[in-house]
Length: 320
Image 1 (cartoon, helix red, strand yellow):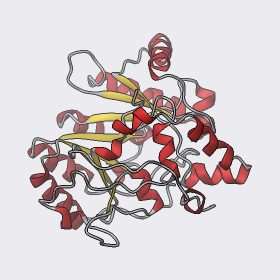
Image 2: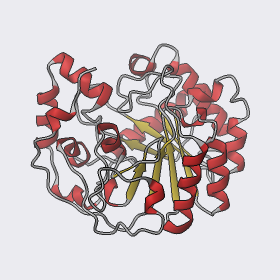
Image 3: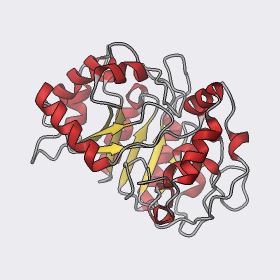
Image 4: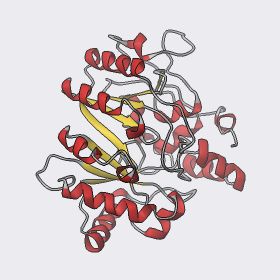
């Protein structure tokens, strides 16, 4: 795989600082039952990295003192981590909302037969990957048969109440572009998703998150292989919108890797760019218990243009 950080190091991206912390995002491991083309984590079935129980306890200790009200759990397929359910139960006991970044197909994996019931019982918010509402595009990006499985899993979630009005069970979908281009306007695409999924499959959901592909890891390496990396970076830079700086996720989110080390965002985590804190080369979540990160400088490189281009992009979709 081609390294992307050397192409991102020289940067003129504006300096920014943190606001009040609202979300703790933890990557509990890179093991996944899929290997998607756009995956900025480079997750897959052969990856073995996963968060252990000691680190999970460190995360929970931080949650108790931080005032954070949302635990965002990602991977890989986070549900494959043996401590996933322990983290969910413990966070809910602390009255912290939990978000599961689910690839949908995990719901049909052996050993996960009771997963939907577990998520329902703990009112876990689901953010589900569905990079298009057309079978051809989804299978091209995520593998043959993934679309059909995803549709069955969405219908299953709907039967349990997810996405249904008044249920209190949130089901959001995530769209990623098919290649080196900016995503379309989120409201327009959400309307198309609702109509097609509703008419064809009877599926309902709460919101669609439109996310820009980041020029790092697997997607960035693919751009380099095709000779399109600089062209894509120019696209992001030319679409830069200064007003998006006020809403970028790194201002209010803290990212933790499977070992417990801390970053300003998930993308910085994948590039190995640690949180700047007290001149340490890297900081563990256990060292931040009781700390206030407000106004701490955020580590930025050229990939940050991916979050500020056009309508903006974050883990919660478009910014504007």
